[in-house]
Length: 633
Ligand code: ATP
Image 1 (cartoon, rainbow, N blue to C red):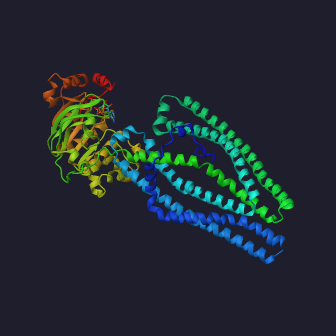
Image 2: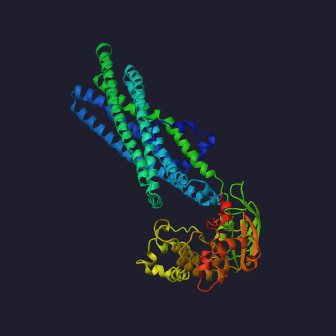
Image 3: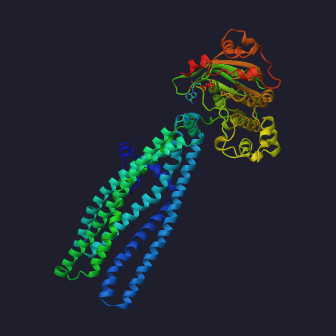
């Protein structure tokens, strides 16, 4: 008790009590069922060890009566040895029980975690964008971890407490029913005030916990890599410190109050618990001296000892309801996740596609993320194998969304996307995704070395292959300049590298994957001109050699493609080559003129040294783009 997960329900828990149905229970037991044999053994062990643990208290009576008062040395030694042996036996059984119990609990949570991880892996992109990452992780760690404690603590303690109580009561009634009755009345009288005192303490602890969470939140936010940067750049150090200080001093007060509540609590507890035995001695003495000559000193001692052993079990059994509700809530939360439908999965008749030509077609595709706002409307285009297309358009027009539909991160609402001539929903998911390489805007690198990140694309890649890929991606010079070369750590999410370096590593990664279709989502954020030139040099030959889709923001990238699609408000509004579109007087011309003609006069050649100065200035999605304002609302 005492912690926030102690013996009392919070208001929130009371309101969100789960509905315990037969189906829920059956489901919970389905996870325990595979281990029923081990569980039976545990139950037997608990029973034996609970009985054994009471034996010394019962034997004390005989030690006093037969050994001490009866002045019988051999009986005294025999009883003492027996008592020791029983205690030893009980502890030994306790060890075996703990081992087996932990083993079962660990295996059940292992099964659940594995199942949950597998399930989460299958969840769509939508699930991860709509659910809070913290919630997902809590479900995986705390909730499933809680299941383990239900099994190792709750179930075990219910069982051993019930057995201890029954055995203790039987033994008391056998000794003397009047004293046993007094015992039954006393125990709840003392446990109830104890619980009340406990609740006060628990309330303070919970408040302290909330404050602690707040402090952690502040720390997480302001001492993280990007958080501290924001604080520095906006000069908010003082304000953040004030916030921190306020929570911190609240914590001090709460901690003191909590300690002191605990102190009173212990004081009351010690006084109360000593009243019980005294009462038994008194009534026992009166009975023994006045009414019942058969009642012995030993009997009274046994009754007092057994009374002492009842407080604990009664107290924990009073908590059972709370434990039960909490456990069921935890299982309900876990099952909620298990029950979330896997939105994107292999069709039963999915076709394997070990080889692919990389061709893509959109046929009258409609798409919406939330079922309300239409993001793509009747989008149709086709990209033949070996060709390349640049998609341009204002920010928020739906360019990345189009790309997401090809590897089935989302499924279309109407129409179809085909890959290699087959509807993507009919292709084996693993095969489909193995043929598509995406260099995204937000490059994600795992915390590890550059080598680890490259091997992620192809586990069997040789050193030569990796170097070759890095050279092609124009990142090899950078790697060579690092002390540790390929074994340089990239830092948390690649934060030790610049945006350009990260993107070039991710290009190398895609090169190792060698996909039939390459998708390049060009960074909208301005890179410095050298970085841009390097990326351009890396990407140009790639585009030449394979089927590619480029979400382009720079003219040089646009010009590298065979064809241009202009997207606006989720529709393809123009389609053609640069030469065809630039003079057509449409959206492309407008974008070209507002963004681009200010920065240059003549249209530069597509290739050559990679990027012209003019190309770098061509940012469709920049802040000066009037279209992008309109669309972002
Ligand atoms: P940019 O050039 O800025 O990257 P874009 O043309 O690639 O923009 P998309 O990312 O495809 O645009 O977004 C199109 C629209 O869909 C935007 O209005 C955006 O707010 C919305 N959107 C994008 N992702 C999601 C999502 N996961 N859930 C809901 N809406 C989304």
